[in-house]
Length: 330
Image (cartoon, rainbow, N blue to C red; front, side):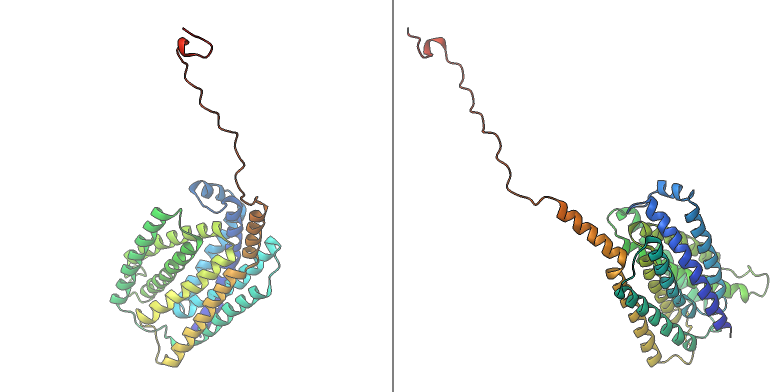
């Protein structure tokens, strides 16, 4: 029963995250045109729309943390795909875009894949499974390495990296953060003394650093593309990372998990990924940007042969001595 309550809380979290993402994404797009800098952050901190989005994201995160206390990462994280549908509708209304058939198809693929994945995960995972210290330490070490690699890459090559890097990076970081949140809640709930006696503070600090870096990546991705494309990548990559860690590292698989169930989950995840790929190619705003670039290219004059320049002046003859000049004789 607790797992289904977690599903409800995760759905409410998805609504808050979708609305907050749309608000922040549109605010960032108005301030930072393709590139987010520190000066842009200062401007955003004075924008009510961005602050409203921040509050909604905070509420969504709190609901998600509560859901993780009731169910496994494998169950909770994939439900975030619902946020994709809500964000797409809100963004289309804000930009007055008409959602085309292929966009609806992409949304359907993401939603269907996520729904099948969640249904299988509820039956194939056990939230009561004990988690070893080795598993927790493994997740912490992996996240430290990933945070360093992604942070250094963004610092050194940030100007040449596209929005895809930031979306994928944020999705990976958030997947690890969700796992560490789950592990911390398990320690708090199972503590024999005060709730904080058994907390692994290194895991908490690592999760906080990764969450901050992931937040920066998301804001940078907002500056490079529409918010529904950003959340589409996050709602696929984040749960996939969480599921892989839950099944392969944390040992959350229940006795009901079998090879056919695993194949079905993999197929559902593939369907959701295809949906994201279709959305990235046929989203109305993407098509609008392509048309704008095509119009700019058509407006530029076609390159032609260079116009002939003025005739080159012949070099002046050097002055001759007076006795060698024409008309003068000795």
